[in-house]
Image 1 (cartoon, rainbow, N blue to C red):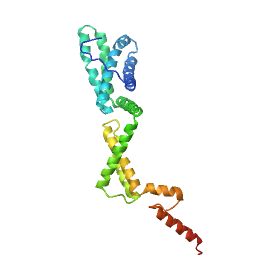
Image 2: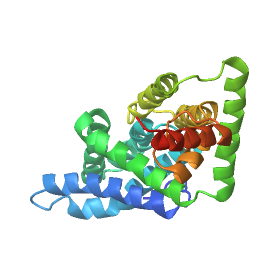
Image 3: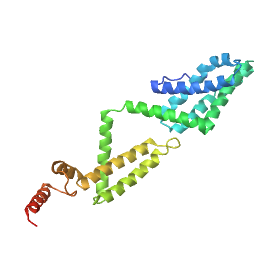
Image 4: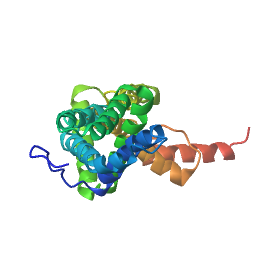
Length: 255
């Protein structure tokens, strides 16, 4: 079916194309399962291209706008609901059987959009496919950019707050940042915001680095690596030597 107002679907990357095929397959599987007598199957084949076009446009728009995964299916629904004009035109032209099949496909789509049991797996597929694609395309420059953000956050925290004085204080600060990160992660398919999630990750990393620096843990770890089991708040080489000398002297002193 070709009409002048049908939008040509854009090319999708392989990850999004796989997602498009998954959505189309689920919709068609519903239609085939319902059509036990096989009467509608020839019409389904006619409209596979229309179905793929609508899903392709929806996924492309989602990827371009970086909308949350939970908005993907309603967006898809908006595109395919426009096909109701084609359904009406088919009916006016006397193609009532074709119009009926396409209308049933649209109804299935609206059911997917409105039913949590069906919507959540598809939304999860959108998110997982996109994250997998993004992870495979990560670059060294992006990793360096993350380190730069952590350094900036660390400098800002140092300017606003006094140094951390104990492991317990450091853990409390890190726990607070982790709690905020956890809130973002648990938004998974509702209103998750990846920019906020990244910001929380940066703050967690900065607080971990600050704890290591304020408590002298890097220096202590280096000393403990050479000395074995020694007191945990050794601040410099002189302190280490003093402890070692005292232990040796004590071992030579008779009771």
